Length: 375
Image (cartoon, rainbow, N blue to C red; front, side):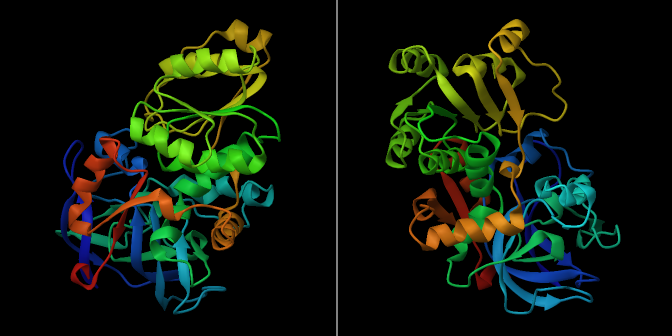
């Protein structure tokens, strides 16, 4: 079928809305009519080259929610009409990683940047006669997607699509970074560095875990105001200000758990993040760095002498097929504030405006809502 999509043809160029052709679902694949797509910072890394796909053009988008329109052969537990969220990491449930309880590290994740289908290694999307590489096997910046069942999670149909799409990446990653990767315990002091979609989700996770003080760090004043609204006890413009205040408020104890959710992680900042981390504390780096950056600055002696832990995480260390419905059930129960995380909704042809708003610090999360005009 022919439709539209947001394509990237080379680095450091704007997204181009143009005609694409999407193939029919094959074995264990479904076709989803997309209703909403979240605008995550990771897709901007495609633009800068921080996350290089296997080739161009790239079809962006890895947060999305919609309705199944067609089911291919051998699909299990999914049917036409199901409301679904697309998980940016597939989770097969059968590989050694999944069997070990690391479903966020499913072996199918090795294909995330390859742009070819899990089912048969071929391309499902073309444009201008060329094969297209969809972001994380999804490509949600288009009103339709053909994806493998391992990337599809059935959800409660009463959840609004603009809210549901957020748990395909940002909310699940941020919340899990606090509750799983950092393993925040009641009474612990926490710092969240970077207040975007992931940061707000991490902050809510810290609140739910019973953190005592929550120090939010972001250079944008409006985002600091949002952090306080979502449960932070203190907010600062710089890590230096936060570190000094944290030392005073905690009588030198510092933050037992630190979650880093900045737009782009740089190795030169690691020692600064560890500086606000308490002895025997954990610093969780959720933010993505450039895939070709290999240098980091940290005092190895202090890392050892103060027994600090530097922890990476992807998808918050969780299980997408469990966590996505669970988080949405919390939303339905009024325990998780997702509505206020959606700052603004955009049309597909406003995608470049939406990403500029993100870079300008105007959004917690922008969401693309698809209309009949896009299809």
